Image 1 (cartoon, rainbow, N blue to C red):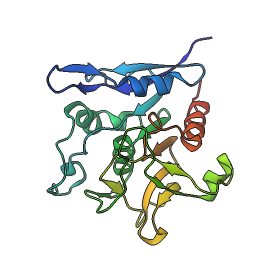
Image 2 (cartoon, one colour):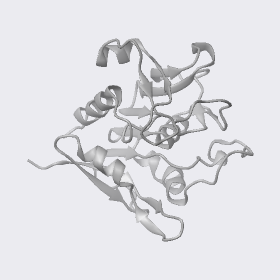
Image 3 (cartoon, rainbow, N blue to C red):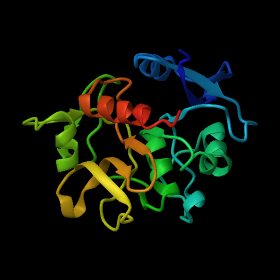
Image 4 (cartoon, rainbow, N blue to C red):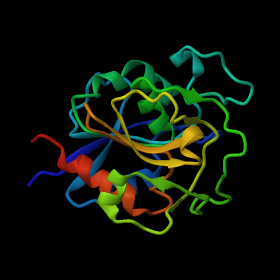
Length: 223
């Protein structure tokens, strides 16, 4: 039986020695799921022959992409990830399932009509890549997937985020951080599209919700 192919947009790796590829942590995470294999996408591919798309984390999304003026704490975007967002991502939405992490979460949310806060004041951060940072509140839908844990902690390596306020009605929030009225969205899916996104990094800090979301994405593949 042939494996499910999950495509990951390649990007620049290393500052002094320029390489193009995908971080091993993302590849290892994808490969940990049974029956799947990751594949690095090249910039010139219009629509790659893949079964599912995985959007990794990274530097900030260019604010001009969503009609905003750059903030003073917004960092330079990754050239290849920004190119994929601007010219390729739309080709996959609604065509195949998408699983997104951190920057990928933000790219997907903005592409689907959500707003992005360019700098979150006081948002908790993990000191180390594999360390938890804060608890999140799970929606009833998320609890149906993994039960009802007393607390649910995730890691955090982002200073931008998507506000729960004025989310497009097609979004299905699965988790958020903070008081709901002023909360930051932490995980979502969508009424119309097979998209599954988390604001944290499950490839560096294991959690059951991201695992179940990833499995749902795999199971939604139309073979």
